[in-house]
Amino acid sequence: MEMKRAQYINHLMEQRRNGFIKVITGLRRVGKSYILNKLFYRYLINEGFSNDHIIQVELDRRENKELRNPDRLYGHILSKMIDQNEYIVLLDEIQLVPEFPDILNSLLHYDNLDIYATGSNSRFLSSDIVTEFRGRSREIHILPLTWTEFLEAYQGDESKAWEEYYTYGGLPQVVLASTRNEKADILDELYRLVYIKDIVERNNIKDPENLSELISVLSSQTGSLTNTAKLANTFSSLKKAKLSEGTINRYISHLEDAFLISKAERYDIKGKKYIGALRKYYFEDTGLRNVRLGFTQTEINHLMESIVFNELRYRGFSIRVGVIEQNYTNEKGSRAKKQLEIDFYATRHDRSFYIQCTLSLKDAGKRLQEERPFMLIRDSFRKIIIVEENVIPHNDENGIFIIGIKDFLSNKDILEY
Image (cartoon, rainbow, N blue to C red; front, side):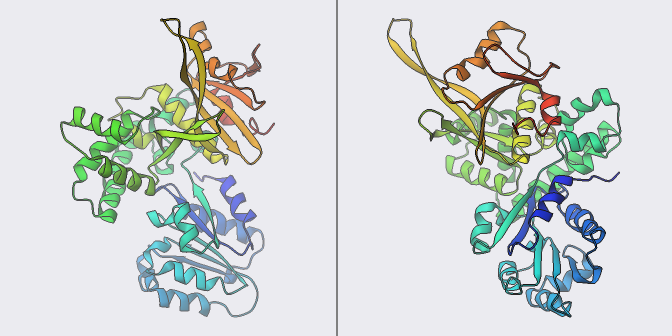
């Protein structure tokens, strides 16, 4: 079964000949090498690009071990350039090469080179790319399969597809596994032997058990507001051990660097500013989150929120947790204020949306709870409530757009008008 991953191929093609290094980042085993070496390469050939003008080096292959030497790699690429026509350079797992930023920056001096590279480690975060490549790079971040990509590859019972997606996630190797036991085994092995081992070795962590336990705490608090102080208290009460706030901050940074988790900061909608230290953390893949908890805490509301968060990222949005104040009269008859939360305030260029996620709106009290923050917002940005149940997409009497989760995930144009 071949996965098309068409959006990423389109994105790579849009970046052609722009004078920048195209750096492909993402979680390990998310399909970066497959996209670059198989799909993109084939697309170039089908578009008529000459094979002898594609310089392809898979640096994690044993036969290319000598090319991990920066000078040999540099010489190898230059030796392939026999004329002044355009050459496309595809470098897979470039972080295996010492001094790789210097190599790539040096290659930019050749106007007939169009350079693409994949990497898996922390030096490939956006902020580091700007520094390492002196502002001469563009990041293309690969996420696990979206719902629509998952359906293209899924070969099981259609009625069970949604449950399998939010339970086992969208890592290609897992999606293609034939049984649930096999999916769980692959996730467990990836978690223990790839992600945790990689993070521990890369960052020289002396207490891997504490790191692993912190991941458990973050897994159980997915979609909940937290900060390092709260995490330290939770860790102490649940694990009967102490972990300093500084260590927690450092570990979370390592997890973000490995693309296991991403955060959403709180944002004051009226004041137009970030507020406080509270934030939410989401796993880039729900399967990796669930396997850490032994598939015992698969509450669909939290997983649904994670899936929407990553879908918004896939569609190019920046995402924050919206906060808006409400004035009210307390039990003593005095005027007071409280903060109401909007799950996501999503922005992209000139587009902004407010989004709530909930299982159902059948209960009147629940509907009021979800809609109340929207009623306090005076701008004209679209307001959306995504529900887990199947509903006919519609605007309610308050102008709020109601849509089912599968319809939202399947319709890439829903946020385009």
